[in-house]
Each structure stands twice: as C-alpha cells, then as structure tokens.
Length: 343
Picture 1: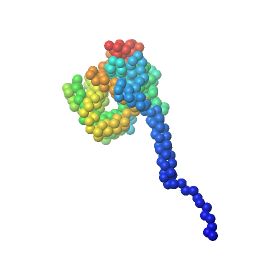
Picture 2 (picture 1 turned 90 degrees about the vertical axis):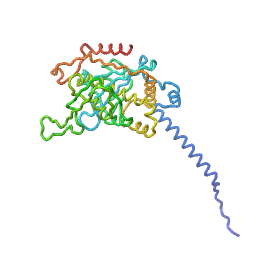
Picture 3 (picture 1 turned 60 degrees about the horizontal axis):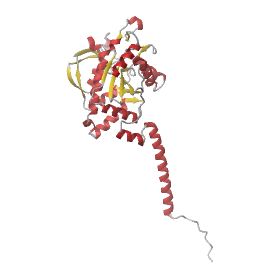
Picture 4 (picture 1 turned 135 degrees about the vertical axis):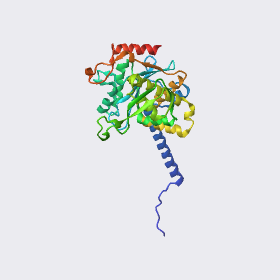
C-alpha cells in the first residue's frame, strides 16, 4: 500500500492573476486620487476651475473693489554684485469686469522710510532674512508707495527673460527719443581691473538707440531697458520706467499673436523659458486666469501711469546717495493713482 500524500491547496492561476490585478488597480486608483488631490492643492486646478477657464473668465482672483493688482519685479540675475536688486518695479492693475489693464511704474530709486533704503533693495533684504521672503517684503513696501493692495507678485529674472524675447523672434518697439549711453556695463567685467586704468573704462561700452521703429532681439531689448547713463532726460529713472513698459507691452503683443504658439517646439521652449525665468506666488489656475483677462483686454493697450511729477531729488547729503522722495506726501501720490485708475 502506497503512503497517503497530503494534498496542498494551490489556487488556480487565473484566480491569483485576478486578485493581483484587482490589487494593482485599487493601488493605482488610490495613488491617482492622492496625486490628484495634491496636484489640485498645489496648482489650484480642479475640474471646476478647468471648466471655468474654458467657458468663462477663469478662477476667482484675489481682488479689492473689482481690481486685482500684481507686482512685477525684474532682477538682473546672474552672480554679479546686486544681482537680486530689482531694476524693474511695475504694478499691473486688472479690472476683470471692464476688461481693462493699467501699468503703474515705480521708480527704483524711490526712498522707503521703512527700509531706510531705496525700494529696489526690498527684495534683497527679504531674501537675506529668509528664502522667498523677498517677494513678501517687496509687496509690503510697494503697497505703501502706491496705496493699493498687492494681491500677487511675479519676479522676472532678466538673465533668463532675454531668451523669451529671442524665442518669439524679437519684438518691435518705437523709440520716442534717440539717445547714447557711454557707460553701459559690460556683462562679466564688473570686477575687471582694466590693466590699472583708474577709470575702469573697460567695464563699460557705448550703446546707441535711434528714434523710430526698432526690431530688437533679447539682448538689445534688455540693453534698451537697463540703460541708465544717457545724457538728458533719457538717462533718468523715469525714462527707464517708460522703456520697461514699452518692452513689456511689445512682448505682450507678440505673445497674444496666435502664430507665436503654432509651432509645438516653440511653444514648449516658451513654457520652459518662462518657468526658468520667473518666480511667483500665483498658482497655475490664477496665472491662466490673469492671462485670459489680459487677452480679453487685447483691443486696448494698457493704460500707463507714472507719478514722476510728484517726486523730487533731495540733496545727496540728506540720504548719502541719489534718491527720489515725494514732493508733498505719499498720500498725494495715492490719490493721483486712484484718480487715474478710475478714468
């Protein structure tokens, strides 16, 4: 008699495969749900907001009295001294109901009693204290100067922004006044000893812009914006503020052209360049909504607001450097800006 062999139950292979497949499906759905939740929290994009972006004006933006105010900051970038000082300070004010846009230029040399320094140093001081603190401090300081709540901030690193202009094939700007700047800094030569030249002439070059329509690539556009040492009015901080607005408006016009986005490779290059060159506290849904509001106001150019007539240059001994301060008070500037926005 043969010994009895104890049988071991082995489930059919099809059942094993079924349970494994069911487990993997459940795991996949769980991970997808968790990823989707974290994605929605991080970006602000939900099925509802996507629907709003497609069929309506987009997500709800922070606002006051129907206006959303966005602080635009431009830094030189790179590794040279002062790379995180803001050369460009603009407030973009959107009226979502009227589909209108206004751009308020804030001179970088405007003195802040809170900082005990110029406004262009706010981002630097905030970053020294805490990574990311530069955006927060700049919002607070500029709010005090323009008398408007700043809801969002967008920081542009011009060392990367140059490539965006090149990717779209350059921009068209009408130069109102010809000027020559004999002391435009040469990139990379900030610390050059110039073979002992006491005037360090090798650190600078002469740049000239003629009056009239100009097609500019990225390098030319940034040179046009950054020039500070031209003779006469074009060497003033006010002229720089005007040129900043001209370049931003010209780039916006190029980006609003559908042909700019026809090429998939160009579109992807633009997305990558924007991502590298910008830092913001806006989520994707808010960014897309701001873009949509601006597209809706495409028929009219943004209103440009400057309060230079309300400023004066105090003697150097008062602050130990060149600065700008209000002739009367910041309250007078606030009232002027509000009046301009309501017109």
